[in-house]
Image 1 (cartoon, one colour):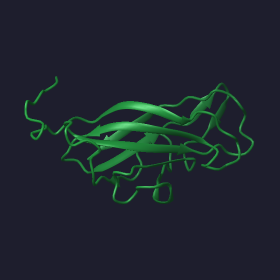
Image 2: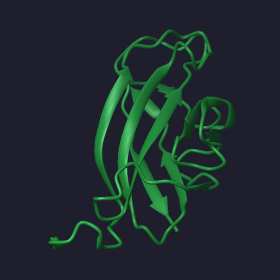
Image 3: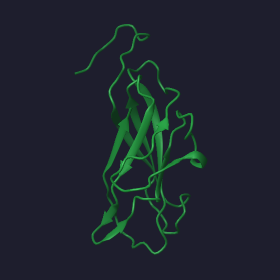
Image 4: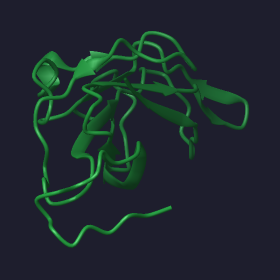
Length: 143
């Protein structure tokens, strides 16, 4: 269900939902660097009362080939107080397992219910990885 408030100063808590994903770099070079890897920006609504945010990813698969999620994917958000840039990003350390949480501190749009955040996800491709079109699943969690 959706709630509409006539007064934008009185917004609801919001629900956890990914409202969009944009690929910033959809082509990668297999050189084991984040700079030449894949990059996405996830637009997420997080309940206002929840300040902890984490993500999980499955391994990326293309036919018989795969790229492990563990230690090849990191994420950060400018709306975080502790993982706001690539230098402080949270690393995914195991596939299909939620990462340690990052702490959310700000909201991109306070006129919308919930906390609006942009999460940058970067993935490096190990040297020697076979070319192809890879796919994976992901999850988001807030507490």
